[in-house]
Image (tube, rainbow, N blue to C red; front, side, top):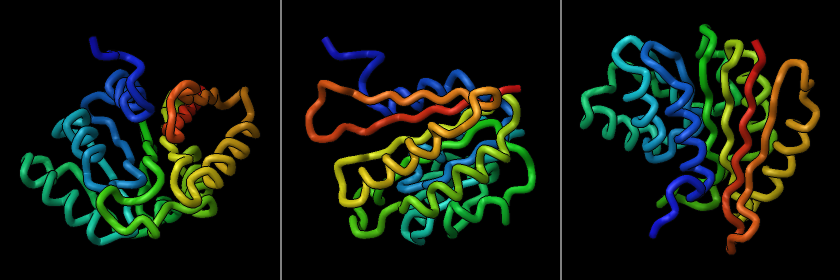
Length: 190
């Protein structure tokens, strides 16, 4: 028998996304990678919704674009080749959900990774852009070079958020080997 609900941090994030995102929502994939999360979000927001997707690597933007075109939903997505720290430059409307899938591009150069400084800047700006009851999700990977440092920085920042305005949880798999991913989820209060 396979596990069904508590598989890994990314599956937990997707369960939250499915419960939260609805037709016509405006959402952000702050790290598009190979486009899996962007595609997932684009299907959920429907024709009237919008997905913004950021990545610093052209390879990630191009593979995500191809995936969206193959699925006939590229028209509801705006891909931006820039740091997620610059979301306020490109996104003017408020957001219903934001997801960060930190680390490196799967199948890409493992030396190109998300960094604490730009990630924290993007989180701060993202929290300001969230609607009431909006959710910001962060999946972090402590097992790669620089990953644990980034998770510690994110955790330290999130611990300081005012509980009158935000609810923050951290979920990690304490009995799994090889530094399993960690999920942070933040809900902005209405």
